Structure formats: C-alpha cells, structure tokens
Length: 508
Image (cartoon, rainbow, N blue to C red; front, side, top):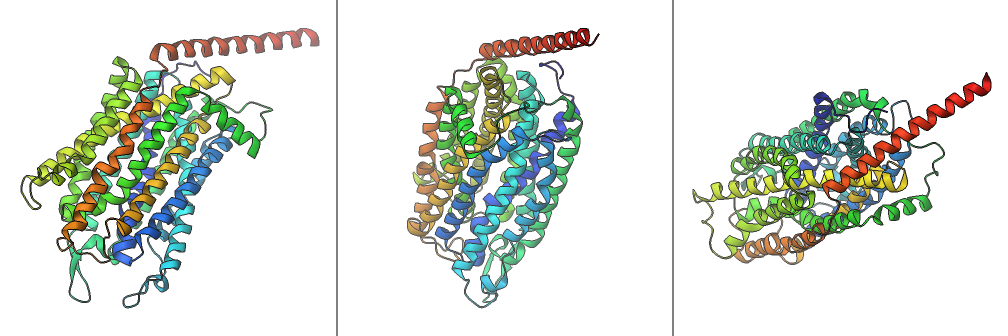
C-alpha cells in the first residue's frame, strides 16, 4: 500500500472520468425520452409509465447497497471493483435497446391500439434489468473513486474530472439527439405534422448510438484504471460473510454517522424533485414553451461550459469554504434556476412563446442551473469520500461500496416517487391527452403543467438544504482523521515487520 496521501496520475483521473459517460448517456436517454416515447409516440398511460419507472427504480434502490457490499467483500486478481466494471456494459446496452424497441404486437402497429398491460410489463421488465446492470457498474465505479485517493484535494479533482466527462458528454449527446436525430418533423398517415421526437420510428439511430457510447466508455474506464488495482484497498481476511443480517447491520451502522444521515435525508428530499423534473422536462419543452427540436438541442450544448466551470470551481471553493456551504450554494442555484422561468411565465413576466427573447432567457437559466448542479455534485461526492475515511477510523473497514450505494438507495427510492408523482399528475391533474400537438393543447392543461413543473416541484428540494446545513465534518477534522489513519497504517506495517523478525528468530 502506498502513502495514504499519494496523488493520482492525470491519466488515471481521466480514465476514471471517461466511465461516467456511459452512465450519463444511459440516464439521458432514459430520463429525457422514456415518458414521451411511451406516452405520445406509442400511447401508454402516463400513470402506468410512472408506475413502471417507480417499481424499477425501487428495485434498483434495493440492489444498490447489495452490490456495494458485495463489491466491498469481493476478492479476485482484478481487485474488488473491476470485475463489475467489465461485466456490466454489454447487458446494460442490450437492455437499453429493448426498452426502446417493444414488440409490434404490443404497440398495435400502424393501425391498432396499444396493449396497455403488455406494454407496461415490457417497459417494467426491461427497465428493472437495465437499472440492475447500471447498478453493477455505477456503484463499484463510484466506490473506486472513493479509494483511488484519500487526499482531500486530489479526491475533489478526481470527482471534478468525473463530473466534467459525464455531464459534458451527456449535454453533447443531448445536443446531437435533438439537433441531428430528431431534427425536423414527421408526417403521420392522416397528414398530421408532429416533431420527430413524438414519432416512434425516429428512435432507432439515436438508441444505437447511445448503446455504442455506453460500451466504449465503460470498457475504456475499466481498462484505463486497471493498473491501479495493486494499490487499492482489499477486503479484510475473515470478514463476516454477506447475509441479510450483515446487510442491515452494516447499513444501519453507516447511518449511525450523523454526517452521513444528514446527507441521506437531504438527498431523499432533493431527488423527489429531480424525479419529477426528469419526467416533466421534455413535456415542458414541447407543450409549455412550444419549442422546436432545433431549439431544444441548445440547452444541452449551453450547459457544457457551465458544467465544466462548476466542476472546476467546486474544488477551488472547497479549498476556501467548508464542503457543506459549497453544496448548499450549488443546490440552491440549481433549484432556483430550474423552475424560475416557469414561475415567471405563470406570473405573466416571461416573453411570449416564439419571442426572440425567450430562448436567450431559457438558455441562461439552464446554464445557471447546470453551474449550480456541477458545484453541488462534486462537493457531495467529495463529502462521501470523507465519510468513508471517517468510518474507516471508527470501524477499521473501507466501505466505499456501502457508503456510495446506500446514498443511491435513499436517492432512488425518493426519485422513483418523483417519477410516479409526475406520471400520475400528467394523467389526473395536468390531464395531457394522447397524441397532443404542440400549440393546440388547452391553455388550462398548459397552466397546470407549469404549476406542477415549477413551484410544486421545487418544494421538497428546498427542504433538503436544511439537512445539508447540519453536516459538520470540517476540513480540519478530516485532516486529523487522515493523520490518524496514516499513523495507524505505519503502526500496522511496523507490527507486521516485527512479527516477521520474531518468526525468523524462532526459525533460526
């Protein structure tokens, strides 16, 4: 084991960051297009879509801690994390392909009505599988980031690079999807002209492109970080075997750390709003703002420099301020700017749809939200790495897999609720009809869409800031923890050396 504060080579940081591209591209396809594809392009009820997504993400939330704890205990010549990085990408890409290619017998083809129940079963089944395979990659990948370096500033830079690669590539993919694959309009058999993203036949090329990016990026990340395996932590010999009892014991043990508990509750509240936004955003673009696909594509591109700037600023801010203040500032900006234009429109203070001033204002809002998101995310991931160090001091175990996966457990449980709430609201509160044509939707429906996507969505997210404010693992305290861990490591080495000498004298 090398020195506890060893700095990582730049190429290792880049290789780690490349892996985030696969996750973000998958989530971009799923979160952006799944609801509008199944509802408007195929004709599945939004309530059933929301239920399918909720069940899949709940299953995903349960699998996250299990995968994390299995990877914490995994022993192989490829270490604890890399076997999962190599195993996940192929089944993940296959699952994404089948999500967007339901059998024609379920969709009703060109003339028939879709079979609601079988479409629901198809979507739910492949989504559960896809989210499971995504977990097999993302949890070991984040855990790997937590143990690649223990130096606080180096860890911040590592997750900063990870965020830049992930969200910048996601934004560029969104720009390409909207500006190339969905550019223009489709003409239906009855002569109705609709945007291409409302036409099911337009999805094939973009899905294949997403699957290719997933495969290439994850394999490159696994290969590029493989040389660090000898330097990574190993599970202790004689550790208790994984069982249902040990699972809950370790999970509850991690939550006894109040700093970790505050992050969990904050994430829980925040992700309810995130889940609602992920479902409603494309409907807002299409029906609330009545934007063309050539306009929607600019949101992804505009967020790239903001994400890069936020990921660069976050480590610098964390050098000057405590992590909790950086998180709170970043997330407040995210919450504010995601829903501010909608609130202003509801108050009659935004330019009319089609106005020359509308797009610049929306793009500026997206950039500010992306900046806040990147700042907050890098700080949260750095917090989790610090908590892993604190737990090691308390328990003697490196449990990055548990720390990162339990966060995902609570986040996805609430995120699934957000998807479900949004899906049901589209059917019962907003009451958006099938095959709705932008510009021809009733004004009351558009108003209700804005209310749900603006002030209601932001409500839970604002409460999350109260819990992040209670996080109290300071920079000085973390430095003290690292000093104690370093001293413990040196003592263990000295004890091991002394034991060898005693055995050699005995043999002599």
